Structure formats: C-alpha cells, structure tokens
Amino acid sequence: MRDLTSIYTERFNVVLQRLDEKLCEFLLEVFESHEFVARIFTRPKKIASFLEKAEQQDDAGNAKYKDPLTEIQDQLGALVITRFLSDIPHVESLIDSTFRRIEISTKEPQSAAEFGYIGKHYVLFLPTDITTHFQNEDHPVFFELQIKTLFQYAWSETNHKLFYKNKSDLSTDQKRRMAFVAAQAWGADVLIDEMKIDLASQRSD
Amino acid sequence: MAITHVHSYLVHPGKGLDESARQEIRGTELKLEGKLFAMIERIYTKTRDDCKTSVSFTSDSQQNEARDLIVNYAEAPNANSGQKLAKRLQLSTDGTSGMGLLFLVRGEEGTKVKTLISRFPADVGILAEETKGRLNVEYLEKVFMKNSNKYKAACYEDQSLKTGYWKGLIVDHQIQYGVVRTVSDYWVKDFLASDCLTTPQLGSTRLAKMFDKAIKEAPTAIVKEQLASSAKLIPNLDGKKVSAALLAKQFGLPSLAVDCLKSAATNEEIYQEEFVLHEESFTSILSFESVELNNGAILTAPTGQFDQVFKEEIVDKNKGLKVYRTEGIDTDRRFRKAKP
Image (cartoon, rainbow over all chains, first blue to last red; front, top):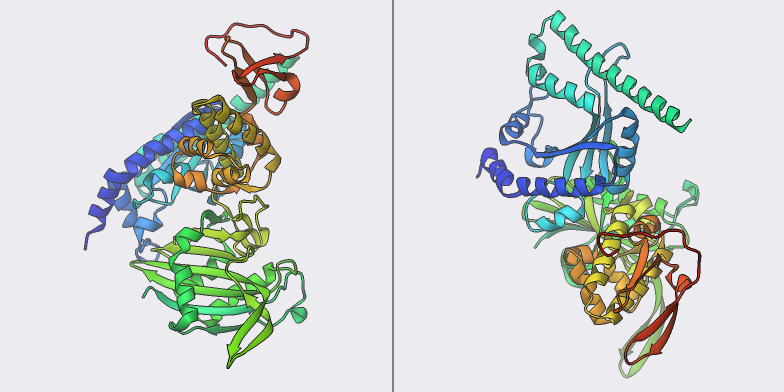
C-alpha cells in the first residue's frame, strides 16, 4: 500500500500543478474586467506543507485528519487582493455569483482591542469549467479562496514568515510589536479607503 | 454485486400539514433478488446515463441537513435512517407532486460508497391478465412508473463520507422531454437542500460565449442565422433550467448548427451541463448583433433590436442579395483598429 507522501507527490506532480494553472486562468478571466482587483495568486499546496498539515493533532493528541487526501481542502489555494477595503464587497459579490461554496468565514481578532490577522476565507467547489479537463483523474473537489487588501496581505505574509511557527517563543514585547504592525496595516487600510471616498467626492463636486 | 441495501417507502405529501394530518410513512427493506431488485439494479447501474445535472448541497459552514441524512443512510443503511429521509421528502412534497414511492439504494463501488435516491410518482394503470381463455381487466391505483415525466433521482458517490458527498447528480424527467421547464424546486431546493453546481451567472456567461463562438465559426450564412435566431430567444428563458443540448433540441436546430454548437463547447460534459439561465449574464456577452455584408458594410444593433433597427428586404433569394434600411440621427462616428 502506497504511503501518503508518494500518493500526494504524484497528485501534486500529475494533477495539482495543472489544476492550479487552470484555476489561475479561470480566475483571471472572471476578474479581468474588474478594476477592484489588484492581484490574483493561486498555488497548489506544496508537498512538505501538505504532509506537515496531515500530521497535525487535535487537542487530545489524536490525528486531526484520518483521511488527509480528502479532508485537507486547501490543496489548491487562491488569493484575491484588492487595493481598498471598499473593494472587498465587490469581490465577494462576484465570488457569490460565480462559485458554489460549502464554507465562508471572516478571520479577525476575537477582541476589538486586538490587532492581528484579518481576511475572508471561502471553501469553494472547483467549477465544471475546470474539472471537465480532469474527468478521469483523481482531483480535489474544493479549493480555498482568500480575499485580502494589499496591506492585509503585506502583514500576513511577513507575519507568517517571521512569527507563525514561533508564536510560543515570542516575548511579550515581540507580541506587542507584532500587534502594532497589524494595527498599522489596519489603520492604513481604513485611512486609504477614507481618502479614496473623500477624493471621489471632491472630484464629483 | 455492488448493491448492499435497498429500502422503499410510500410517501404521501405532507408539506404545510400538521403532524396529525400527515399520513404515516410505511417502508420495507427489499431482498436483493427477484424481478423488482433486478429493475432497481438496472436503474442503479445506469445512473451515469440518467443523471445529468450536477448539484451541490448549499452551506456556509460545511453543514447541510439533507446531506447529513443521506450520509447517515450511506454509513448505516437501515429502516430508521431511511425513514428519516422519507420523512424529509414528505415535508418537502405538496399536493401538486402527489404521492411517491421512494427507493434508497446503497452500494459499494470499489473504495467508494454510492447512494441512489429515486422517487417514482404515483399514477393509475390498467392490468390485463389472460387466464384460461378469458381476459381480466382491472383498474390499478398506485402504479409507479420510471418513464413518467415526474420521475426523480439523485446519486452520490464518494470514497469519504465525512468530507465527500457534497455534490451529486440528479435526474429530473420534467426537463428531459426536450422542453425547457422551471427546475423542480421541491426536489432540488427543498428535499436535497441543493442547487445546480454551476451558478446561473457562470452557466449563462459560458452559454453566451458558446453561441458567440459557434456563430463566428459557422461555415455558412444560413447556419449563422439559425444559431443567431436561437440566441435571440434565449433571454426569454430567464429563470428556467437550460443546457446547450436542451436548447438545441428546444429550438429544433438543424444538425449542422448543432455540430457548430457542440464544437464551441469545451466538451460533451459542458454541452450537456444544466443550470438556471440568468438573462443579464447572457445578454452582457451577446450585447450587440452584427451582420457583415460582402460589400464591406457591417451593421450593428443591440441584440434583440436588430430587426427593428434594420429592415431587411430580400432582393434576390437565389443570390442571397438583400437590402437593409435604417433611419436615425448621427450620434457618433469613429474609426476602429479591428472589425467589431
């Protein structure tokens, strides 16, 4: 019986990379005529990253995923980046009309006094326009899509690189600095959006 | 043998009725032998041929009640888990749909578990029996026919019941007879708590691009005209379940036009896939109709208005010679890099 590493490696090499290309093409076509999208990224989940996630345990110390190949739903991921906070509802509307979903969630700090990761996450069905090219192949049914502003993206990328795996090792001061950077990103988003609205109002006057 | 369990329930309509007014649901487990089982087995085996519409359970939090009941049955197929599905069907069915015979068929296909849910509507029939030189003719109530245009089925097949069974295939004979009808809401939306996998906007945009491509690549003016005439009628089907295949049948497109449409589709699956038409998405792609003449003239008008804007007069039918007349005030004149 083949092990998970070899099965996922084959899936990654044979299917996921091609699926990723198709997904990227598809998303670019969906959003191409809409100026509220700054960038679109897609990625197949790297083999090491998948295996690490597959080995995760729950609070009781049991394997979190009994069947990682079907339970891990972000083997394909997409990120839609907007310039302004006020562009996010437009992206949401386009996603609602284009894809069917099984999950939608807003990730944000639990308390209003905290600053941290913010983003909108979806678990969406891969549309038939894509899966039709993989009819007899073993491929995931879903992909994960996130929406972020440029500032949210900048914060989350740097935060992930520096702190994600070392959260428990951070000093109080370091955690405070991390929160400060998140607050700066949040503030930049809010002010930039307010300026956008003000300037638009001035121009129309 | 793939089938492991078959349960059947007689389900009377119960939507909108108090519990006391609803008829009791009686069910039975079928033996995996005999003529009835053989018929069920044929239906089970042919689901891929019958079930053409992809549907997905609706959810915002990876939770769906209908899916839970179907997964429960697939995990532990018994009278109790089957009864719960039958009850859900009763609560989704009103008097219009009438009584139905529900079959739940569970099977194993390699590492996958397959569950077929099929509903035969009640009808009346006549039983004719020959005995010792005599003919007995009898009126039968509660006859259940698969060929009825009210037959419905849904099929789910997956390796994992925990994370799979989110999408399935359905058959709805009410749209199988070459006539485009409104999707049977009670079966898909109420009972299965689902929707067509392809959204109205996505399907309609894709359909418009398919027609656009087919018209551009059609080999003759006549075929272009046939496809264009059909495309102009499609917006009238807003809210109805359509597919390129259904529309080709609905509009009686000749075989050459059908071939052009099929070529414009990515493949057979896309050509056959059903979704609910969204008029705005369709017309946003095919916004303008253009006719190009052999003298270089290109006549363009908003789709649906071309025949009002340009009056066509046939001068020589054999040569295909026409005169187009129009009247209006100049509002714009421009140069373009390429043909519109």
